[in-house]
Structure formats: structure tokens, C-alpha cells
Length: 137
Image 1: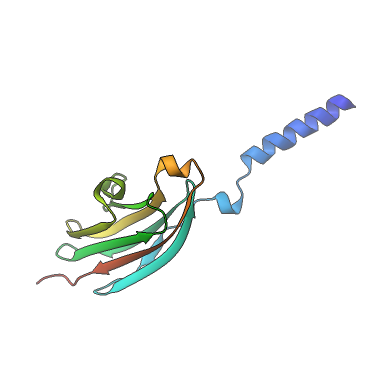
Image 2: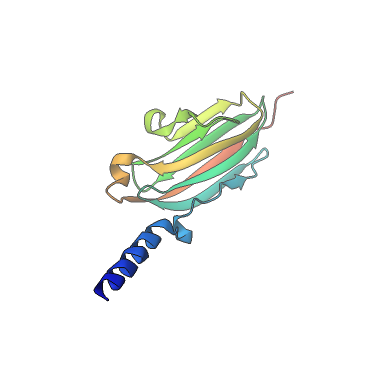
């Protein structure tokens, strides 16, 4: 009888490790509509969480992004269309980004806390502003 209880307890623990809770599931990137205007989003991240935004931009437009966060360990990266590697890393380059768009398509912006602080469970409230200028003719 004790063996059956131990086996059931083991299976329950094993199943708990396999099942993903809804809050642990990755969040879908939020689409930003900033066609020739400024859009500001507010959020909060904790630990190893990250939040992602997608903004569609065309060659000739200028994209600027500014992050203001309650924790100096919060930053953002920018990933170009069709890529997985950021071409802008906020932890290295700062929390202000401005660049003429080099490729048409969706640009991914990921807000996160650097690993050292994330492992400590630190959190950050933030405001991130996206501005997309009209394409030059």
C-alpha cells in the first residue's frame, strides 16, 4: 500500500513539472500602430519575464524608441524583420534608440531585465514610447 501511495505521489510531482500554467506560457507580442505618430505603452516585468512589441515599419521611415523604467536593469532590444538576433541591444547601447529603417516589415522590441538582476527576482515598471516618422518621398 505504501508503495502505491509513493508511486502516485511520484507521478503527481512528475505531472506537475510537465504541465505549464497559463501565466508561465509565453505572451504574444503586442502590435503597435504608430503610423506617423507616437504611441506609449506601460507595463511591468519581473525576474526573467520579458514583454514584446511588434511595430511595422518601411524603408525611409525613422523609428525611435525611448524606455523609462523604475529599475536601471530594465532594457530593450530591437530585432529586425526575419531575424532572431537583435541589431540593437539596450543593455549595451542605452535606453534611447533612433534609426532610419533599413528593412521593410515587422520589427520586434523586447523589454527585459538583465540576467544578473532577473535571477534575483527584481522587477520594473516601465513606460516605452514608439515614434515612427513618415517615409520620405
